[in-house]
Image (cartoon, rainbow, N blue to C red; front, side):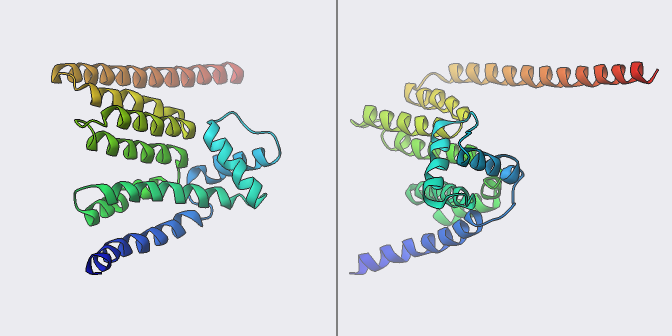
Length: 222
């Protein structure tokens, strides 16, 4: 009896904070750059039978909301908020460190507020965090291959929400391979060089377009 009371006492704060955060996130209106710019137009397009090209699971989720809620686009924010916060709390509850500290980090670190804007990406990242749980728990045991399959399955679902989650397949594979530190440093160096090259290329192209546009305006003005 005492164990049940202690378990309820541990779970109750999670339930209360989950309901508070879910209510704030799920029933927000117009909060986030992509609220009216991306997600509302996407919902309306799918509702009207002209779905835009996008990730399959998120498209299916919009269709499911339309089946139950019709044209009420707030439903997609309610469902995605429930999924995102639910996944994060599953991760927090199963972590061996302080639950209170992880919850504070989730709130004060900006991740919760960030989810108001990039809904699909944060769900994909939350699924990746769940995949890491399986990696951390079964790295050495007999269930190593089984946990690898589960982790890859979760990443596959994450890709269905946002294609950028494809990089997580590489991360999970590297964690299981347990390569030498020099190899990890090599991958990190190559990744840093690639990111720097892409950023510089983007900046160069953006500046070139601005200069070209200014040149055209000067010609037209003359």
